[in-house]
Image (cartoon, rainbow, N blue to C red):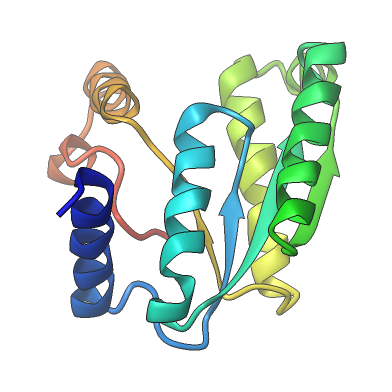
Amino acid sequence: MPKKTAFAQSFRVHMMQTEILRPGARIGVAVSGGADSVALLHLLIELRKKLAIVLSVVHFNHKLRGRASEADEKFVARLAAEHSLQFFVAREDISAKAKRERANLEDAARRARYAFFDRLVSEGLLDKIAVAHTADDQAETVLAHILRGTGLTGLGGIHPESG
């Protein structure tokens, strides 16, 4: 069995056993344009019929990299159109937001992005948002939690399901 298919099969079985993705669920895939989120989108496209889920693409433009941010948004919009998926997008000048709030840029970006995701779910447009994370993201999260001081929950890093 090819490696891609074996991974997809393992992922599908895990999703069915844990019931994280239930049949009929409207799942928004958070796609930044980076390799990890695009890979997640392709994986879920491959499995959507077997999982019986409805996919959409969700993109948050942080407006941090000028033309590159605009190019990412256009790329993700084309990807959604190519697969006939509904596309949800929000834009915010995160640099200005971070300055206004006297906040860390990365934290301001994360809070704005997740507020957009939460709004899509609370308005009933989507049931869940799928977000890709790499092993490096997991390690960074655990380290940040340790540096801030954490309990046992924080040592778990990024959890499979939140909110």
